[in-house]
Amino acid sequence: MSATEYTHPEQSRHRENEREPSRDIRFDIGELAELTKIQPSALRFYERHGILRSAGRLGGRRIFDMTGVHQLAAIDYWREAGFTVEEIAGLVSDANTKDETQKAAATRLAELDRFIEQAERAKQFLRHVIECAHPTLTECPYYLAHLQDRVEEIVSGTYQRGQHLRLQPMTGAPRSKRSAAG
Image 1 (cartoon, helix red, strand yellow):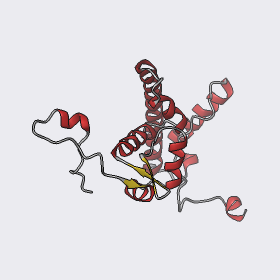
Image 2 (image 1 turned 45 degrees about the vertical axis):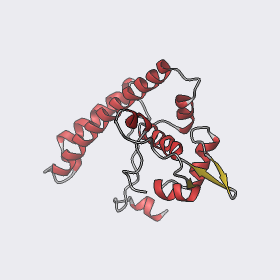
Image 3 (image 1 turned 60 degrees about the vertical axis):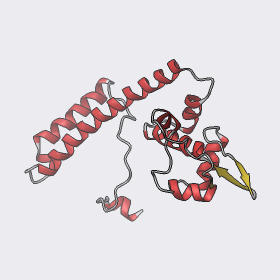
């Protein structure tokens, strides 16, 4: 199927002389998994949580129509924004109100703003480490000032553990001799 074959119903209503999108385009679970790069087990997981609905079964296999593709697009956006499957289920539920959705979005937006601020500080720190002219970091006043700031946070009780950036582990990063041996 080419990307131009399907137009969202809202878009087609606003265009004159355009036929309704074909709702008879169907994918079995394997085809949908291949198209979306989502494992079939994840599609079934989404279905169990009520955020993805199949159009039925054919020969014992789940079949999805374009409504399912739209549901997956919505799931993808919510997941990209950091929501869990359980949270998404609540957000897309018919029982959920617009106010509840907006409140959840505002809360997540504030979290993302804090994350971005923290990431910017981390980038600034790492750039300095890369560009530092001192033979070792323990001779660098900038690095030592950062360490002192952290020490003061810890001693004063203002340090909040768990605010570290959650990134994928690096491959090829230097390891301590102790962790390499164990």
